[in-house]
Amino acid sequence: MKLRKMKVGQVGIVSELTTSDPQYRQKLLRMGLTRNAEFAVVRKAPFGGPIELEVKGSRLVLRSDEADALEVEKK
Image (cartoon, rainbow, N blue to C red; front, side, top):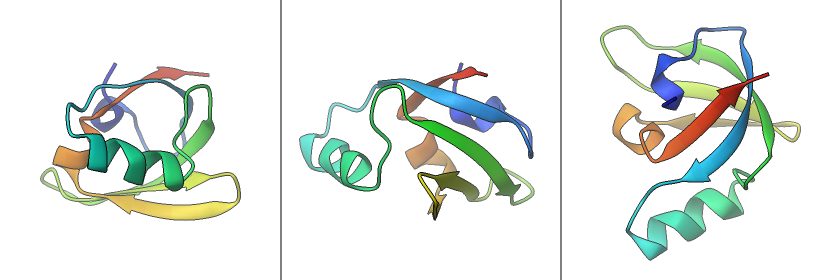
């Protein structure tokens, strides 16, 4: 499933990065969004706005189009 489908408070695991842009892929990896990384959805802005995640003790905010590069599984 895509990250934007998850609800606030849900915990998930990154299963795949689906971006074809190598620079953006490296950016996601540096932020800790590696395969099998566990994360929690902290907040979601209304109307498809940014999504705040907690990953490995850090908080990240991704635009919804950036979040579409992550395939995730609910934990």
